[in-house]
Image (tube, rainbow, N blue to C red; front, side, top):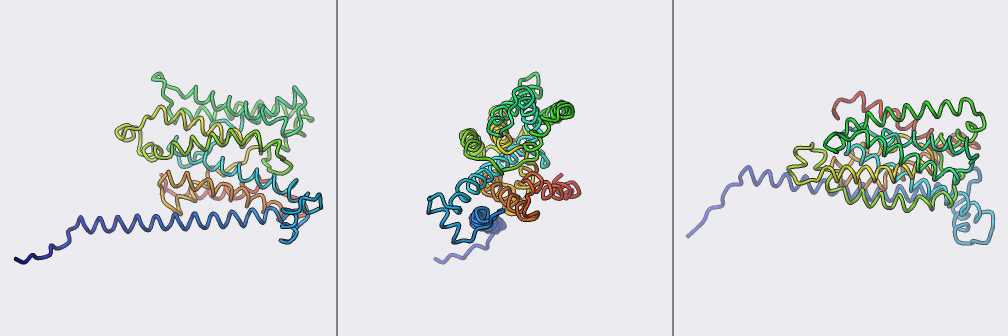
Length: 353
């Protein structure tokens, strides 16, 4: 008895196309991860070598290994390494917070600052300078963190509906209103107090320079907790992007997801802002760039933002050291130059709407 082969059906062809698409997606992710790791390693090495006192590769190696109090050792370990480490931590925190914020509000133009975090931190810093005379960054750190958390908590409370569930549209509006109010208060204080303004202007520009371990170490546990929460939420973000009804049908617990995402955003953005000042556009540029490279899977975008965010902030810091040598441009200025054209392009492009 002989059998004849059945002709392939449209379903087998669809399955084959799906497998090819998934394989291509995996290849893009692998290439992006590999390229990101290489780029980050190059940027770290460049960051350690470039500055007002440039070092050759041999001098960098000597500074890393000698630990003898030589010029190279002091430059590498006391100036360049703390700055580079802070850029890596702050960049990763802001990028992950941006992915969470866009997923939470379902708004592709959202970034962590719209929660009022930056405005709350700035107001707290100004208050600490005016009332307590605190002028050092490590002294202002805890006030900035408390101000960021209080502002974000207030915005979330205002966004609650009668059902005790947060409305993402009301969350954005509450954050914008709070930012405007606190910004006005901060402006009034600095307008009439020149001493406060002189200290505040160095923090508000956004910088990773002149920040030592006394600034980096206190924020590490907070950012670590925020990253763990964010990565835990990663599988739920795709369901959240489908809308409330679809997410509920898939078994997602929307209330719990929103609360945990809000806590993660507050920890990540609040700690990063407290340490380095308000650095804008990182949480906007990184998610959109990753989606262009690897697709819209929120789990992958969130994981790779841990690489892309540090690379962007470190690149901005290096560019700031080079373009106005022997002076420097602060990181916040450079990221604004990078992010503003991206935001304009997104506003002109209708494909994301």
